[in-house]
Length: 445
Image (cartoon, rainbow, N blue to C red; front, side, top):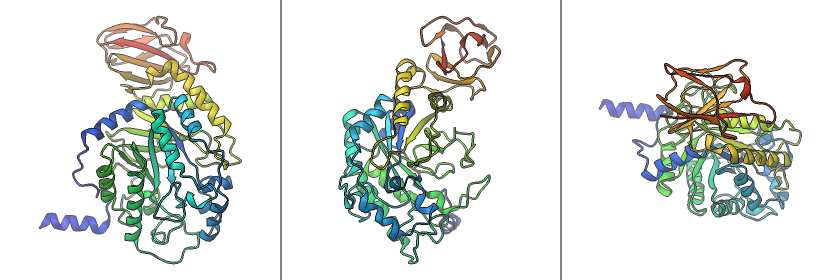
C-alpha cells in the first residue's frame, strides 16, 4: 500500500525522475554507446525558417513575432544552395563521425515531409524533404545521423505555453489539450524513426521550458508531465540501437543513453546552464563556431582553429565528444569560415587522430597546461599552453614505460620516472600558433 501511495505522489508532482521504468538497454544499444564514445567529433546543423531573418534561431521568441506573421516565412523559404553531399562531405573530411540535424526547432517548423503538421518544408517553394536528403547522404558516405527534435513549441496551441518559460509573445490565446501534443510528438518521432533509415540518436531540447530557471540546487520538478518514459520507450522499440539524449540541464533520466552539456565542458559550468553531476553515460559537449546556433548576419566572432582544437582536446580529455555547430545561411550554403575551420580540423586529425578517436578521458582532469587522453597501453599528453616549467604527472598509471615520443614525428622525449612520478621538460615542446597542440605519447603497461 505504501509503495502505491509513493507512486501516486510521484505522478502527481511530475517529478523528473519518472521515466522508462527499469530501462535495460539492448546489446545493440550498448554497442552504439561505445561507438559514440569512440567517435569524439560531430557536426551540429541549425537550419530552418529562422535562418532567413539572420538573427538566430530564437528570433521568434526574442522579437515576439506572432504565429500568423511568422507563418509567412514559409512562403519564401527556398534554400536552393542546399546540397546534402556538400554538407556530409564537409563533416566527413573535417573528421566528424556523425551529424546532428535540427529537424524541428522551438518555432515548430518541421524540416521533413510530415503528415502531422502543415507547417513543414513541403509547403514552401523549396518543396524538398531536407531531412531525407541529408539522412540518405549520411548513410551513403558512412556518417551517422542524429535528429535534434524540440519538445518545446512556440506555435501550437496544444503545447502548454501558459505554464512554460518562453513563447509568451507569439499571440496564442487558445489552450489546447496537452495529451494531443504528446501524441503529436509521438507521431512525428515515429515518422523520423521509420522513414529515414537507421537513426543513431534523438537529441531532445526544450524540456527546461517547463522548469524553473537554471541555478544551483533548483527543483527538478516540471510544470507538466512530459511522459518521457513513453517517448523513450517508443524510440527504443522502433530502433533499439538509437541513443536518446535530452538537453534538460539536469542529471539523466531513466531511459536516456547519453548525457549532454550545452556550451560547457562537463563539470565546468561556465555558461550557468549545467549544474548537473556527470553521470556514467557517454558524454557530449555542444558548442558553436561563432557565438550563434542559427545564422546570425552580424555574428563574425568566428573561433580560430586553435580555439576549435583546444575545445576538441579538452572535451576528449574530459571523456566527452565535441558536437560543433554550424548555422547555414538562408540560401542553404554553409558560411565559408565554418567550412575552412572543419577543413583545418580534418587535416589535423589525419596526423593526430589516434590521440582523439577511440580514447577515453585521462587519469588526471584538465590541467592549466592541457589535457590527457588514453587508450589501453598508451597515454597521450596534449600540451596546449606553455606551463613555463617542467610537467610532473603524479600517480602515473603505468608501472613500466616502454617508449616516449612526439606523435608528430616519433622523436624521442626525455623524461624521468620514479615512484610513479613522471617528469619531463616542457620548454622544448611548448605549443605555438603554428602547432597549437604538442602531443606526447607514453607507451607502457
